[in-house]
Length: 452
Image 1: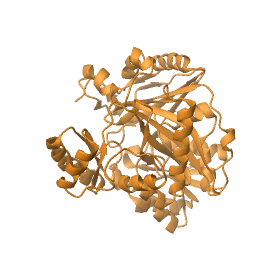
Image 2: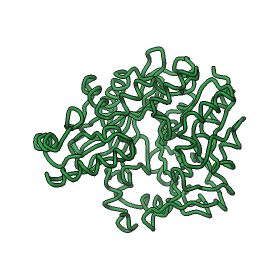
Image 3: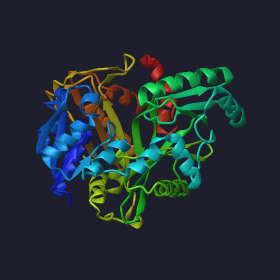
């Protein structure tokens, strides 16, 4: 087992990894930008190193600074968390060159799944259903128009190197497709440094359901069921739950088997998530694989009792998984709300500032994963996530009631948060009855919040 791990991240995921390491008896090293000097993860770690100024490209995304800190601290491994460099194949390769274990999949798996056109081709070879679309990237307008006529409008133009909902456009006719190609390429080039795009059939009112997988270095690849992730704004997930309200045992089995095939197809190691769209007829299609721990991993932990972060660490250290597929059982229902420092009543504008009061909820079945506390500052340089509120109940009804109670208890002052939005969502009949899709939040709820 590792003796010391550097966490190449910040906020709640850095705190989460530190806690897992502490339970495993592993010393931790935090890194921080000048803006995060007083952050919670810095205070909690055994050691901490400043890696640069506030802008992420000069700190959390600056590989030489991270490697320098890792070398100074003499760590065995680096845990990238999520975001930042967690899905950067080059960073994983650099770690390997320096003799530092990257707690994640091999660089080759990251690279294949990170380029959506390559991932799509790999999934087709593995027999995993994919959304109808181009076989690879589209080179010009004529090719795009021809493919769109074959699969039928509406279509999605998607960045080949995309992620986080960026570089995606919907086109409902030929004129829109020409415009979408140009704008998607511009955004993809500026965001990912790669302007390549491909086409997919646009599914009406799909659900976004993902399967958690984990694999060790001994040939074992297992699944831990699904998570429902359809409550989204601008393709960013806000509420996640497990299980999904629309899942059947038969559909779960088919999707889980496909997810395991997907991971095995790229020789995957570690925790990962295979994401699918599910249409109104129960057909499912692969859209991408996140080659890292997910923000929403706690809901899976609560219904399975398996600590995914500790399993990540054990697997990276060469240990076999501590459970078999037969050991994975599901108990009850779990739900997560992402508490963001944003104002839902003012076009979701970011709300940086110092937190003047912080009183998280408690009681049965309530878990709060946070990287902040009273007196710490939410700075404008990074993601707006301040906490994840996760609850567990015996069934969905109890879980929703518990979430409503916990949201009402959660007191955060000094900044605005998305808590009022979740309180509104949980009162809506369509959400309570599980009748929603990936565009439901924007189309049915957010009109009253002046969402642009």
